[in-house]
Length: 335
View 1 (cartoon, rainbow, N blue to C red):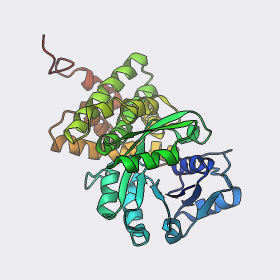
View 2: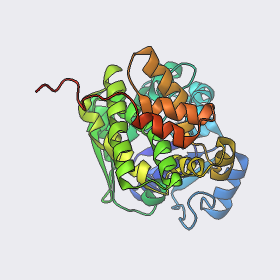
View 3: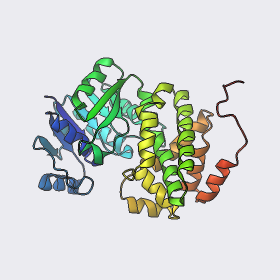
View 4: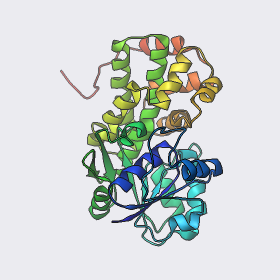
């Protein structure tokens, strides 16, 4: 039995906490949101995000950050991406040296262009930071529906330790040394998922979505490899795998936000209706900045930014993508 603490009690943190508790570990879930703490303590259920899924008895609900960080084998950062840095800053005095920290969020910080693991390494320089990611909706993981993910870590020892804690007969965990590729795949696919939702909202067909997803993973891989990720990673669970599940499922808040945009709603109206953090919106600007800084072509990401932040009509954005100059599918492939 290991001691595992989750900083963040949203749907994903709660689902993974249930998984670890069912694996026999001693689990703590911390939240800064008082109403969330009250709901979880009184109902033993995340009524808003995971209705009908009861928390196992071996999950402790904690509102004291010091207590949540004390004596843990693994500390999981499961807050939404905008809150990773402030949560790390607040928790830093209570985190021991060489603490294994697992990031399960997906995003890129807008002003620094850091991934979430880079933020954690910046704020917690003595921690052993890793990432867990892949095609994994909280609604399904909490119900024990078969799921596969990947853990990225700097050392094989840490990766295997995290693998052992999370893996179950319905939750298969692979390991990888490519933290950068895993994080970028998980963050950038949310931007493409917004576009997929827009297409569905506009009433486009399967051909259109297949084209978007295929060219979308090409954009993700171009930027990801330029930033140090491995091409194999983008063909794996945190790349094409996560892209597929996020672009095709009504569980995806990014897809659902895009769907509302495709139906003509404003970004503000869509976000109000979703009522959760839409990571793709937070990541879109950062993705475009990274592309421009590294001279990487990402036309889908560019058009999504114009739709989100310049009120560009979705139909015009799609038309401009289709009418770009003729090119080969792969520039390096010769006759």
